[in-house]
Image (cartoon, rainbow over all chains, first blue to last red; front, side, top):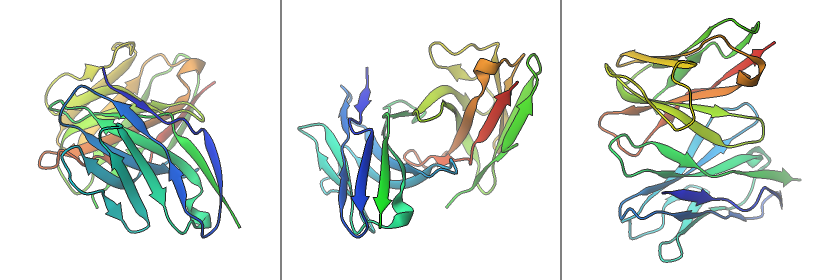
Length: 115
Length: 116
């Protein structure tokens, strides 16, 4: 069975600072995908970044980077130069290695960016 | 990116009534759609996977007769909450996957259901 864990329920970060959100996972599948989503208070799910299990390099998308450590089964999200608009709930998710590609989500981390 | 809409965005209904929520992919064909439920301050829980033209596959613990899912076309899936009760009040989110893209799911904006 797959499992995805986010141990930080909430974090405060100062504007312009970097923040790391932890995510660990457990799966017996050799092929899987890891995602990070942002959910502001409005509720919509915003895709941030994706890392495939066979990708050699860590994924980056603008201010977002994914610190993928396969042996440790961790996929931490790093947000650099935090902005007030980054305040939101952040979810780590893992794609099941099935034909449908369904996602399993972690519990989420609430990030609050302060001036 | 691809756009997924949900309608209605918010609905309030009386206990015992049925509520239908629509999920549409606006600019792509979605062979697979997913329905999630989210309680306040909680994570998204997958309810069911819906494939066009076939019966939905429900996750363990989700009542099929309570949450009816229909995926009649490549751009529309519906979730009907039958005989809704206050405990069904939640945020329902759909997502859609394009046939050619295994990695990407596009999420709708969600529907907030309140059952009085």
